[in-house]
Length: 316
Image 1 (cartoon, one colour):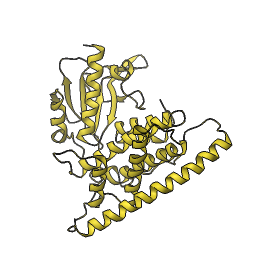
Image 2 (spheres, helix red, strand yellow):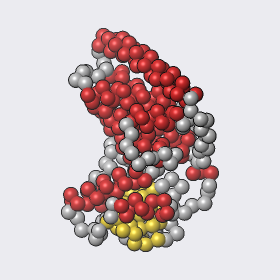
Image 3 (tube, one colour):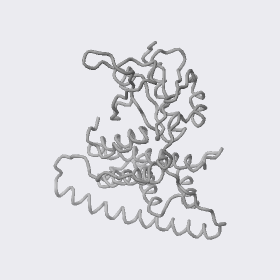
Image 4 (cartoon, helix red, strand yellow):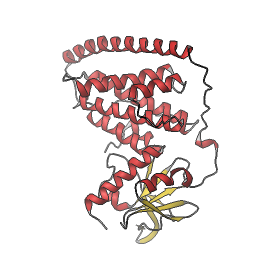
């Protein structure tokens, strides 16, 4: 687990985004090619989140490039965000499909790019008062100077060519937009602008039921769901400003659910099916481990991971 990662701010609103970014960081120096494939997955995830936030999901499947162009043509993303999404998409595809050695400078740039995309998402969809942490690369081993210089020369040439291609794509898209009717820009309302807290049951209950988590109780602070008859299969949807579920301590402490993600135990009396935490020799409030998300798609991913652990460990 990366204790001092620059990506931990992502966990404030999306445990899944944080996990994807931490994988990129863990692989950055030793396996830059694999790191780029993970950066591509980060891009796919954040694009899906944006589409859901904008209510632009459709019944038919789109490729990643089609999704990015759709967001740009509807003025959801700027030129800069478009370029960043295209950068990790193109280089991620090269890392997956071509048997070539990936320049580490490309992976380092992808690391910075997903950081910038995460900051942009937080500023637009999470909180208008969000303050980004200072960017920094993770620690590295000492590199051979001559090798690094050759990497830099090759990297600059490849990047310049990719930027020219992306600029050409942008020109084509801008011409297409001129031919389309004007689309009214959507206003982004930060969840922080409304201070009233409530359990978002109407928004997420259908996703719980889709993966067979049954609704069992509702209090002012949390909605309770249970997967089948597993005693450790209870999940609580909280009344937090950012959508949050809390899972049974066993899943994190014993089964290592989302072990890459740094999360601290949460005490809450609404977690009535969870054990009580012992402090100073006394049992205090019930506790569990929180995981954040933004969309129904992310929630479904989290719940399916919980199911996999429950069924593989054969717990009760």
